[in-house]
Image (cartoon, rainbow, N blue to C red):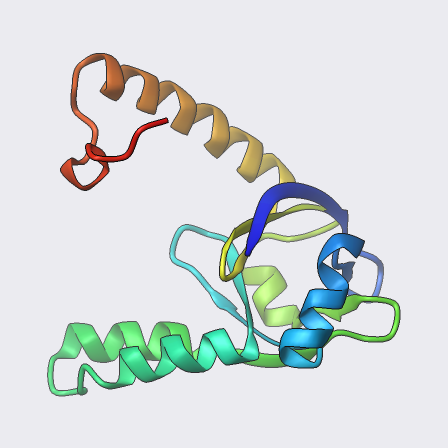
Length: 153
C-alpha cells in the first residue's frame, strides 16, 4: 500500500525517481512495470500494471453503449501508457501526459493505497490547503459524506 506525499524532481529528460521505500515492492509486485494515465483533477495516476489491469477490466465491463461511460473509458484507457521503472528507480513520463498535468521541474508523488497521484508541486500544495479548509468547515457543520460517518479517526 502506498501512502504519504513525496516531493520529486523532474529531470531534463522528463524522469522522476520513485522513492526508495517503494522501489523493491514495485519490483517484487509488478517487475517495475507501471501504467500512467490522466485524471480529470489535473494530476497523473500511476498504477502498478496489475492494479491498472484490474481497474481497466472493471471499467470495460460497464459496456460502451452509454456515451458518458465511453467518454470515461476513452479518458482513462485512451490516455494510458505502459512505463517501466529503470535500474535507478526512475520513470520516464510521456511528454503529452507531462503537458496535460502541467508538470515541469517540481512535483509531488502522493500514495493513495494501490496507486500514486503525481501533481505539479504548486497545484498540490494549493489544493491541499483548499481541501483542509473545506474539510474543516464541512466537519464543523456536520456535512461530511455519509459514507465516511462510520469511520473513526
